Image (cartoon, rainbow, N blue to C red; front, side, top):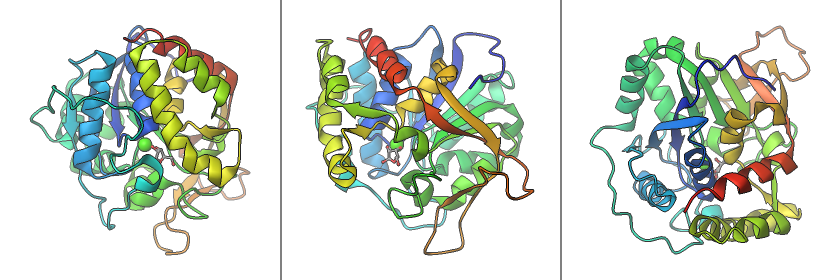
Length: 321
Ligand code: BDR
Ligand code: CA
């Protein structure tokens, strides 16, 4: 799945996130890939757990990577309209249960995450900054509403969210990131920037099997150890639910798409977000078969080469302390 021509490497990104074990692995994969990716900043959002804890987790992950100059900005502490929904049942009380990571010594920057998004997108040359969205889309939607001029300046938004063939994971109809803030997701999928969605249909192919986790642990570095501990914790819920031979590794697929888009397939389609119904709140209604004449608004990914994905991840994590 080739992205549009890449003029300059490394490509500049902002990671918007609610870490979350799989978010943490995504952040680490990005920070381990400085030849291709420059992380301008990390913005945090309420999602897997509350904003304060998600932000602390982001700082811990940055510190773990050794790339301590990476700025972290706290963003929105609740969805635009809805009562917050969290996922301690998956991620643990801290949101990042598993490894014993020290309290961070680095601190957040003194700017709201939404202000950082707007400032960066207005300052950097147009079409050079990619937004990687790993949590509910509140910060990104708020930035688009507050400063509509950013939409045409964003290179692309690549988001983990939604599901069509696989249904939902927080309700039968909805995937967690979209369910938590459906109004925000509606704004993002219909904004003027190019949007790529990586739904459950893809991430349910990226299974962290015993063998793949053992390869990461076998690297023998502290980051590999921490990732092994994180994913060994967070997998228990999914293993019981799905009875597969590994738990899906969602958010790192976003970074893998930037690094090696040809390991994915997908197509341009129309996706709309259900915001009215209680029963199907947050459903990503994907016109995959083109049965409406609604215009395509997203690139909807469908498959991943999971062997290549875990090889890439393991090779990159080996580069960190
Ligand atoms: C998404 O929800 C969160 O729990 C994960 O971090 C991922 O972003 C998967 O539905
Ligand atoms: Ca996430």
